[in-house]
Length: 213
Image (tube, rainbow, N blue to C red; front, top):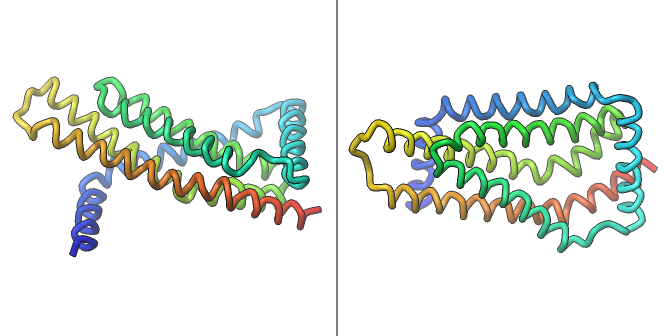
C-alpha cells in the first residue's frame, strides 16, 4: 500500500513538473556537449600536460598506490553533498534560481569534458576507462542532481510567488519540511554513489588498465 502511494506521488510529481524536467535535462545535456567541445579547443601542450597527469594517476592505480577507498568515499560524498546542499540553499533564496541552472550546466560540462578528454586522447580505450570510472556512480548522481535541481527550482518559484504575488497559499513550514526531506533522501542516494565510486570503480579501472597493458 505504501509502495503504491509513493509511486503515485512520484508519478504525479513528474507529470506536474514535466516541462521543468525537460528544460533541466536539455540544459544538462548542453553542458555535457559544451564540455566535450571544450576538449577540442585545448592546445596541444595543454592536452599533453593533462594526459601526463592522467597517465601518472593510472600508473599509480595499477601499482596499487591510489588513495584509500575510505578516503575516496568520504571525499566523493562530501563533494556531491556540498553541491546538492548548495542547490538546496539556493532554492530557499529568491535569487538562487539562475545559479541552480548554472551549477547544473557546470556539472554536465565536467562530465562531458572528462569523457571527451579520455576518448580524445585514448580512443576506444579511453571510452572503456570512462565507462568504468565515470559512468557507474553517475548513473545515480546525475538523476539525483537533475531531480534536486527541479525541486529546488520549483521551491524557489514558490518563494517568489509568496514574496511578490502575496497569494494566500499553504503554510511555509510543511513545504520547508518536505523540502528538507528531499535533501536527506538525496544524500542517502549520494552515499550509495560514493560507495560505488570508492569501492567498485577502482577495481573496474584496474581490470581495464590491466587488460589494456
